[in-house]
Image (cartoon, rainbow, N blue to C red; front, side):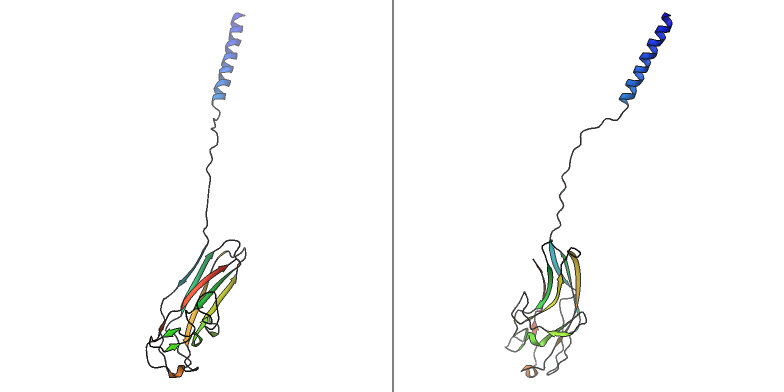
Length: 188
């Protein structure tokens, strides 16, 4: 019987060795380590123009002196939740002298017209957020909601100079130059 008992003791010891071996085969896990994540979407508002110059061939006393090309102003934004609107304005620094020959002869902003996105041709006679009083035109006022805090819009502008009003039919032959500004503003 000693042999039987010995076999049982050996069997028990082998069983314990198997259990110990199985226990050591289980996964060993470390403690979790953390990584702090920070993502910043910067608020932005930009205007890009498809070209930077328009030429006009003027005819004295003519109402139709179209610009040589249309220009597209593409406004792009990524705004904070507190913003309520994006306005896009066209403006001159002077209402009396939107274009000038440098010798005192001027074409006022009231004679300069923009047709925006195929709409009616409109003189720059309004006061907008930028530029001189009575020397601008608001091209767009986009309400901002949760659905368009990031967005884009295009304004295709066609230009005309009307030389029929006031003293404009009597402008002397000269080269008239000026700077039209396009700027956007996001309001709170």
